[in-house]
Length: 151
Image 1 (tube, helix red, strand yellow):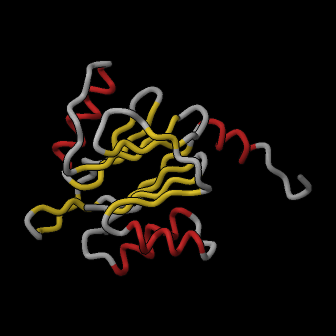
Image 2 (cartoon, rainbow, N blue to C red):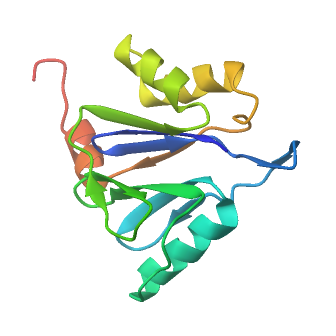
């Protein structure tokens, strides 16, 4: 269980792991490779197994108890893996998933940043907590670097 938020170029999640109602710090659910960043919600073991296969270019098993939210580190595009190894492109302005996803989605709709949305979810969702982890795409970093108040 966790909370993950994607908004074009930004992928944010908490770092709490929960197993049999025991919380622990340890960010197993965020995986970054050369081209993609992945966050697992639900069954961490199942999600990590699928991510490992995707990174190796192998055919992953189907997801049953996990969801994976991914971001292309170059473009910032977001994808969701649900029940299969086929990435579904996120077409909405933003996306939130995991046990605190509904709370984060409401926060985003009210104008919260992705980081704020995860922090708000961690306040109310018992399966969300710990440090907030943020990954930025290359395109987002460039856009931010070239931003001025006059642009």
